[in-house]
Amino acid sequence: MTLTAKELALGYEDRLVVQGLNLEIRRGEIVSFIGPNGSGKSTILKALARTLRARGGAVYLDGRDIQTLPPRQLARRLAFLPQGPQAPADLTVRELVWHGRFPHLRWWESASRADVEAVETALRQTRLEELADRPLTALSGGERQRAWIALALAQSPSILLLDEPTTYLDICHQLEIMELVSRLNAELGLTVAMVLHDINQAARYSHRLVVLHQGRVVAEGPPAGILTEELLRNVFGVESRIQYDSEGKPLCLPTGLARFTKV
Amino acid sequence: MAGRGRRPWLLLVMALVVLAGAFTMSIAWGPVRLSYGQVWQAIFRPQEAPALARTIVWNIRLPRTLVGALVGAGLALSGAILQGVMRNPLADPHIIGVSAGAGLAAVATMNFFPDAPAQAIPAFAFLGALAGAAIVYLLAWRGGVSPLRMVLAGVAVSSLLSAGTSTVLVMFSENVQATMTWLVGGLAGRSWNHWHRLWPYIGGAAAVALALARHLNVLLLGDEVAAGLGVQVERTRLALIALAAILAGAAVSVAGLIGFIGLIVPHIVRLLIGSDHRFLLPASGLLGAALLLAADTAARLVLDPIEIPVGILTTAMGAPFFLYLLRRGRAPR
Image 1 (tube, rainbow over the protein chains, first blue to last red):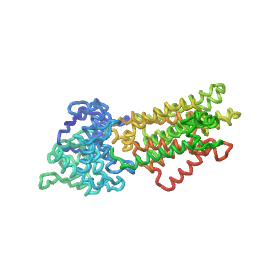
Image 2: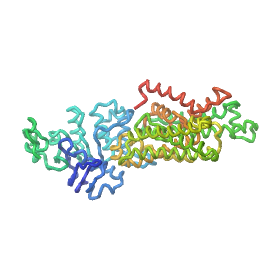
Image 3: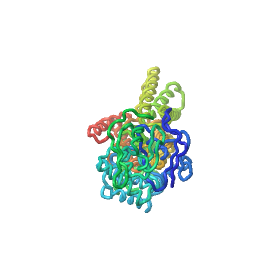
Image 4: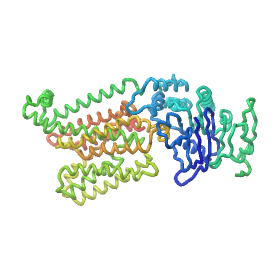
């Protein structure tokens, strides 16, 4: 399944944030959107998930405009986890994950074998079996984020969209989430597109980076090819040194603020 | 779907038992005390029952009790829906302009058209309730309705409409007695006519609301998550608010502005049963009916032979209980 954006224009109220955006998310890859605050990365992700309506252009799922797809049908193929989601205080992990079956169940239908299977599988994939009956409030930040990812997995999607899935987590839980995403991609062939703040994590765990600046794509491709000192200076306004680890993945070490920023 | 095992079902059955008890008491108790045997006989074998018991049950207490049950259920269900939709534990039918709209329409009808037929008052009160909710909804709309904007608009519009009601009261001070009696809310003299006009609205809206319980559950996860799961957020929210307006509007149009049932009952039920609306909604309806019937029975007895309007009693019981929940620190989530 491929997700394509063509000539996308996006905005809030009277402010246009993104204009003329073309983008393709290919089957089976991990793509990360990086860029400074206000560059439009979360906005683009929301449009890909259809929670934000495009001002111009369209998003296509396998060639079909997602606006023309019934919402539940879209939700069975594509799952979206926004930033910092909230749930009622008494909800348990399993109850939360069950909501992922919403697009598969009409209101008069009760859960089938396949629904139970999907929920238990999602709990297993996120290693939450032991915690399944605990209330969300009793979980650590990292566990809670895994529970929300399990909710998305219970939708049985082919594409997973994550908006800053590691924000507010400590470094260990951040890596745990990134490893989980990698594993889901490798084992299930799940296509993942996510917004990340940490450039090094994005470079380490993604097949492809999309670098955004002021609502435009300024660079796009495999991390090793596009992360340069010049790019970081121009887009993020920082001086840095780029090094490569033993696997050839780029690693950027910021050394200070750029004196003057172009662009 | 997965729930908490058998517990919610057990609580639903218990709510049903409580309602049956309150229902029976409401028919048996009053200025003339009937035994439960007489009640049973009068309802199920009326030909064999003594004439007095038959008349009291069929002409007075049964219609009044049935109307009371519908009113209590409608208010509590409306509150349960609104607390979910607004994601605000303080939401209740008053917050969306329903009560204030109904109050102004009813008071204006009573005073400007004193010759209007008796059925006109509930009809206009119902329209006023729906209009109040519609105004609040439209004022809160800005490319979508955010729950917070809706609550704020509701408070403002309700104050404005209440000011209108007070103005009418002052202008027609000679009618204050009758008007106030309606405003505080009561079930005295409610008859089969009221029942026939009430049940299609409450029954229909309740059935649709129960069918939307899963949508409401998903909405509690936030607009973005809900949209991602395939819920059409604005459309669903509008439908739920409209249902809440119909339920509360129909209830207050027949019984006046009965307070606190719509706020308190969903709270208690949430503490007992959790926030899964597939159980929360029906349990709120059942317990709302039970609570109003219990209050109405008490209203007939405490100052016998004077009857207190039940609206005063629900507020007198509801407000302290609400403060108790607040002090315990568990209620508002």
